[in-house]
Length: 170
Image (tube, rainbow, N blue to C red; front, top):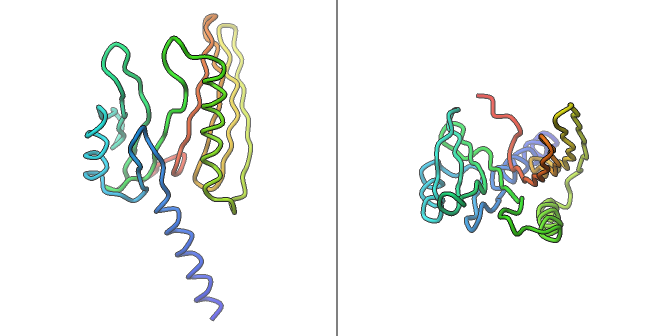
């Protein structure tokens, strides 16, 4: 009886991770969906370009020169295995308020599984011409990273949400 209970719990955990959802722009994506259906849905709203690595795709909004990457999708064995959503405000008119709204929006996504034990990590890298400061909150297979990058006197923020494993090894 105990083994059956543990097996059911494991199936429940795997199924909930497999059915986890995330928005990229206006499109709601579900881990475990087929490559074909995922790319068709994304292409109905955005440009989708393959990346040089295995089965990874960029989702691009807008048209040149103002286009921006709003996310990435990665597949393993033909199924959606990882999705990255870019929360970073784009455009020249972005403000501090826009950045704070993006941080709040990304962190609110972690509330989808209130039972998750979350972990906070930080990383920094300083060099004469640049600096990286980053904090990542991880709750199960959902990660939110907030970074400040300074390169050659220019500063930029990066706010991303990742659903799925950080690494996709075959």
